[in-house]
Image (cartoon, rainbow, N blue to C red; front, side, top):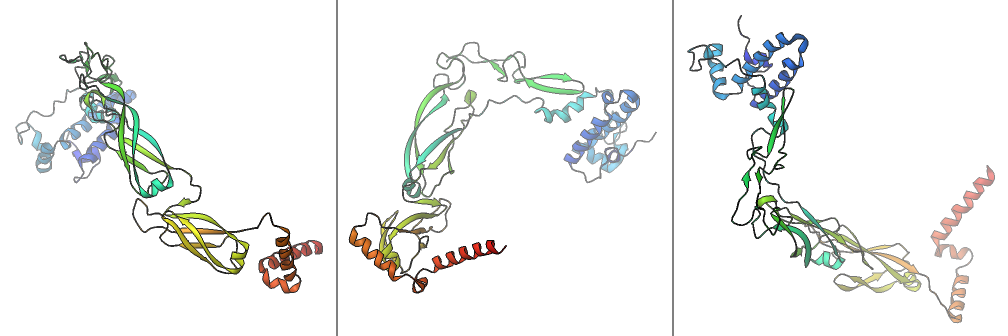
Length: 379
């Protein structure tokens, strides 16, 4: 019986990539493996061998090139230098395990020592420190490489022995149906080595607990939520593996005058009744000192004055932000009798229809209130 085209067996075109071939084989092998088709095991074995043979050829660059040029004749006895066929008596799990090995972490690679854990340090900054930048010293608890055994865990002058259970691989294989599943070695717990004479200082761990002091440079313009990464300043890795990183998490403390919004600063500026009505000039604070702010006549509470370039320059670059001054007209308190009398006279001077032009917002509000109640009455 003539053999089917190998590309046709796997459902592929001739320009299929290595990844396409591997993916097609996985799918078909799962579908037609004899262990999954007990009711029609004989036909499944034939189909599986056909799929396996096609995969063995097309997954090998040299064999695939010969097949593309000569077809099946390339592998007949004496043909194209590939005599002897494919060894069809091989166990089904041989190639199947190789293809599916990547699902379970690879088949024959030794487990590497783990990289050290990353650490996080929460740092509080004042607004001034965050805006201008600062250098701070921090003291953190960490695991560092043992200076006695240099991270090996073995007593100086000795060394760890290769694990006899996994032969240094750190993993063992468990057969589950037609899968070969990898698990950490129960003897060495994935290390691949056994320490018979542990280091007295670290007790075989290769790492010791210590506090260390670091100098951290905080760049100008940072804000709450920003993180600064210090490479290699985290915990030491196991058995000489690389150390983790230290992340400094920034939190900017509330300020008693300013509130930050991105690159802009906001502050409330109280102004007197007289200044609000007549206008004038007041001093307002900035992070660089006091500056003059001109208040126009008839300024109302909530009026915002923008002072260009008096905000923050972000750590990510860009233009300097602005300072937004929110005016609050302050009602005078603790008035003496003369002041009260003057205010009464002033209020009386604004009374009646002639005073409506002096308080347009009040007129608009009370007109709206009157209309609201009139509408309720007429319903």
